[in-house]
Image 1 (cartoon, rainbow, N blue to C red):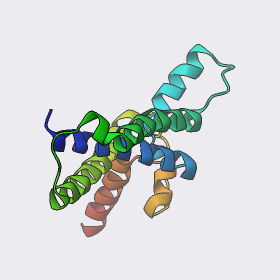
Image 2 (tube, one colour; image 1 turned 180 degrees about the horizontal axis):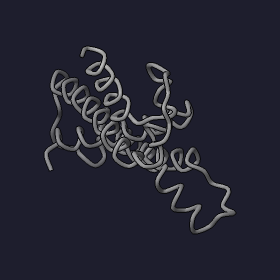
Image 3 (cartoon, rainbow, N blue to C red; image 1 turned 30 degrees about the horizontal axis):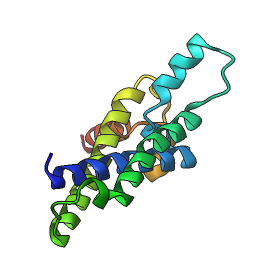
Length: 149
């Protein structure tokens, strides 16, 4: 695999883990991947003490730790080849953007049914505590359309 593709994938995976950890810490349920898994786990084991926050931290650890190990041991497993600074910067920005958009879309898809009943007037990141990103965009767009008529 090309070094630039490896670097892109490592940053992408690291970004996913970092967003999950931050979303869990801030209580932004609309960005968390593990809500559906939490609901499934509690349907099978009702007395389980883990919740979606714990699962998100576990997911973050499982993604960030291997990425950090590979980054800090990069020269030991990839002795040949380099990525130029400008290319590395571009790949980092692209992987971060793609990771953010991927998080918004996947969390909206997986959390649609868990967060469906919540209506909120909150704006900004606060709205992601009770809604998915797609739900927020949809409500804002539909409201704007109805107010313009």
